[in-house]
Length: 100
Picture 1 (cartoon, rainbow, N blue to C red):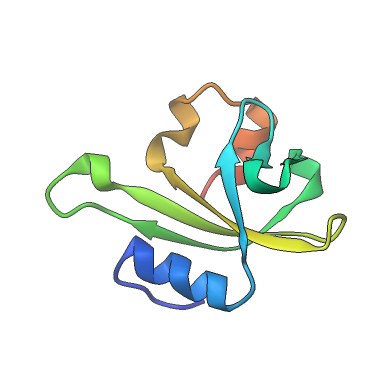
Picture 2 (picture 1 turned 180 degrees about the vertical axis):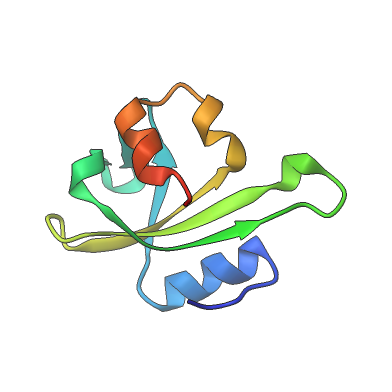
């Protein structure tokens, strides 16, 4: 895995490495609105993740996920706050995104 100082640095490098889809969390899936695509938890895998902790503001705590899908032949990025577990997402999606 790589080592990044900022979220922007991580996202930019992942895009250069082919993670071009921009994913967002939905209630029971991740979705790329640009391509009108939704992936359920069993349709993607997390290749890498990077956790960033805010030095002064806990609201700056973020995780960047590098995601791929063999089924859909794509790679993309999901950027989310640590609070994903308190958002209204399905248990299956929470388990998939949980950082061990």
